[in-house]
Image (cartoon, rainbow, N blue to C red; front, side):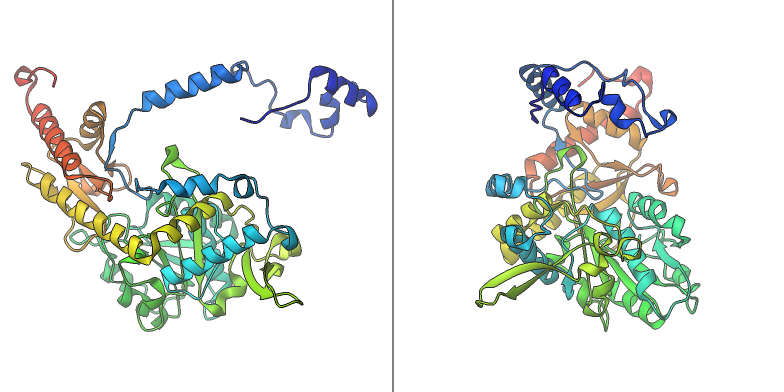
Length: 465
């Protein structure tokens, strides 16, 4: 934990040296109405030993439940070497590499990360990461509006089958720039982007079409046709992808005749633990012709006057620390530690390892769906191919089912009723490579008993199991 070395006596001596009576005087230029005042709800400080004991107790209270939740954050195996290396001091405390001569290790790692991401997505260029997947999509939208010279509008087609949190974040970030997000519905039978609804926008002026692969429901979109449709209608194609899926599926750079123009998403599946929601990192790749519009930093490889390989930040004129208000983006945070872990993770796994992991996830999800849909009243909501998630409809209230499962150490999925009420009592369930046959059978047996108990009238209820 951080150690603050200044004693009260040290503070008094420093204040006396600069002729100030109290620390508050250092902040007197801040209007009183903007100050937060006393932080009364924050408890008093504790010794390190007591803090450690408290945090260990809270960690034990979380338990070790079986996780069948996906929805953008996935429980994958991470080789032990990943974080043993990523938490070395050279990486763990490294600052933004503005001084290339002092940051060659960090710069080389970021260069390798960029190379791996372009290979994985089939794109020409990658930045050195962003804050998370949702903000990466928001930056992709801003980038498309700037870059599409064929479009005079600030309008984006956004499918409802895209992650609801992504849609909300994008709206929050771009609305004050007067960018309009026009939603495209999904087909009630397949879960795919509704082609009929999409066609109603044919010939209209839009800067870009966002194409998720897979979409929030886990369904695999017809990306070739969607990409070509976007280009035929003067739009850029923005791919929002699961990077692990790209190890098994056609990469975004090969969609349709020309490929997607921009590819972004959440990098958490590449070596970042769930960790109660973060930190994660976003990635963003594009074609060569859009490289000057790409936000964040880009690392380049060169040689010095002696012919030795060197690495440096390139195209810095896009960034706000160079051009201020005229910058392409004001993005600064690139989650460098997460990218360090992702680079080590991809290096250890290799192309074959990532592909085998993706295939194992898909196979486990198939087993899970077969097991759960064998229960009376449980059925898949959508037809067609999926990656490692699927939407199921239950014969009981989804919220109550999840609560009962959680009480017995099974995290059964995501209740979709808030964001997609038309689907009824629907769950989004996921199985990664970590879920064994015993885990799946455990989930099936517990869900069966939950359905039985909640389907009975109060007088028929059996003793608690």
